[in-house]
Amino acid sequence: MALAEAGAGGDLVIADTREQVANLNAEIRDHRAAGRAEHGRTVATARGERIGPGDRVATRHNDPDLQVANRQTWTVTSIGVDGSLRLHDPHRYGRDPEIPVDYATQFVELAYATTVHGAQGETVESAHVRIGEHTGAASAYVAMTRGRDVNTAHLVADTLQDAKRQWIDVFGRDRADLGPAHARRQALDGIDRYGPHVRRRPAPSRPPAPSMQSRGPSL
Image 1 (tube, rainbow, N blue to C red):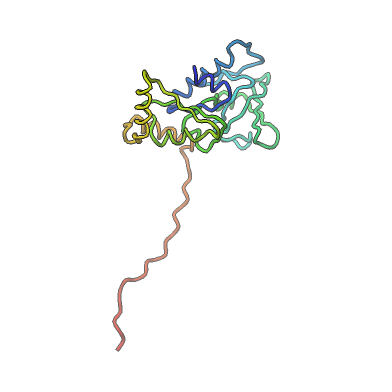
Image 2 (image 1 turned 60 degrees about the vertical axis):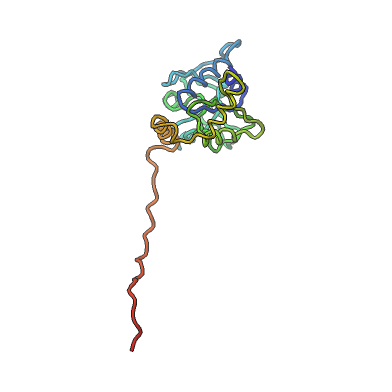
């Protein structure tokens, strides 16, 4: 509930896995919608999410023609009769892009919460981090440095002492401690963030190594 309230209030919420993020996004949207009627049209995505005006969303596929990039975040300002979305980014100059319904249903998702990979490079006023058994030291450091003013860690504990123990355990844990299942999730998140077809620059050709043969003095 605390994370849902934080996300509904506009703060960034960060979690370990995409499954956790999906659940948090649904909870945050439900919290925002509680006690008020849904105004205007909504679009149902292939992920099963419902998107409406005012929602914070992310585009998840590069499309230069639409002027959108993977993981770029927006606010939905309106939905057309055909299901197209009008998106707004206050930090972007130019006209707000209009996203056709085919792209919207496949490549737009709620973005109230994100994974640590998704939060890299982002700076907000306040960030909230869900601490769990898969949270490692590097992830916690990245997540807890996203907020300029406030960074809050959330964990479930029976006592204050238990909470302290969990917090200490996080910073004594590295990726190797989390097992192959976590490594697989990290790899999938990396592909999800950077794409499977990253082009590598060819290695520069090396000049031939100088000869190591020595010569004696001329007589």
